[in-house]
Image (cartoon, rainbow, N blue to C red; front, top):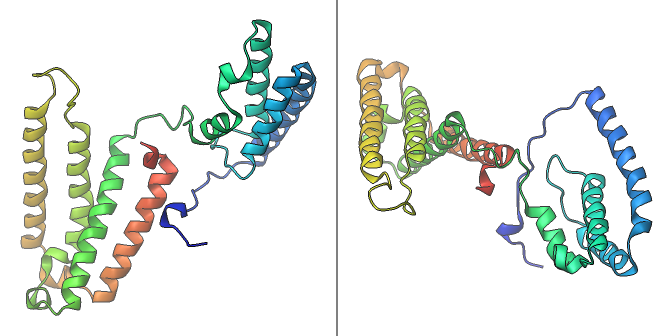
Amino acid sequence: MAFKLSNFSLPKFEKKKSPEQLAAEKEQAEKLQQENDQLQPQLTNKNQEFYHQFHKMMEGRQYHEGRTRESVDNVVLKRLIDGQKTGQTAKQIYGTPTELAEYIESAPTPEELTPPTFVDYLLDSGLFITALFSLLAGIMLLFGNQTMTNGGAMFGPFALLVNFLCGGAAMAVLTRYQPNLDAPKGKRGIPRYLLMSFVAVVVWLFVLSGVVALIPPKFNPMMPMLVYFVIAAAAFLLRTFYRQYKGMEQR
C-alpha cells in the first residue's frame, strides 16, 4: 500500500495530568460504564443492532480530546432510548452507524471551537515567517549568492527575531481584520483591512530596517547555511505541533 502524505499526522502535545485528575477520570469512566450497562438492555432489537454496528465503525477511530468511549456511549444510549419513547428510529436520529462514527471522530469539542487568540495567531504566523526566511537564506547560500555572502544582515539572528515578532504580529493583525465578503456591501470591512495591512507591513519593515541599521554586523552576522535549514525545519515542525495542540488546523 502506497504511503499517502494525507494519512500522516504529527502527534499532539498532551497536557500532563495530575494523579488526582487521572483518578477522578477513571472513577467517572467506571460510573458511566455502570450506567451504560443498565441502559443498553433498554434498547429495542433494532437499536441494539445499530448500537453494535456503531461500535464496530468506531474501531480504530480516535475520540477527540475531552471525550471518552464511555461518555460518548452514554449520550448515544440516552438519545436512542428517548427516541424510542416517541417512535423515532436510530436512523432518524443519527443516520447510519458509519455517519455517527464519522461525526463522533470529526466533530469539534466546545474547547476546539474557541477562537484562537491574538497571541496564537502571532506565534503561528511568526513561526511560518521564520521558517520561510530561514529557508530562503539557506537556499541563497546554497547557490552562492554574493549579496548574502558579503553581508546578510537582513537574515542575521536579530533580523530573524524581528521577523518572528513583528512579522507574526502583522499577520495576526491582518487575520483579525480580515474582511467579511459575505456581509452586505459597505459592511465588509475591506477599506479597514487594506489600511491595517498597509500600517502593519510598514511598521514591520520600519522596525526591521532600524534593527539592521543600529545593531553592528558582528552581532547580527550571516549564519552558516546548515543553521538556516535547521531553523527552517524546526520552525515548521513547531508550527505544526502548535496548530495541532491549539486545534487551529481544524478551522
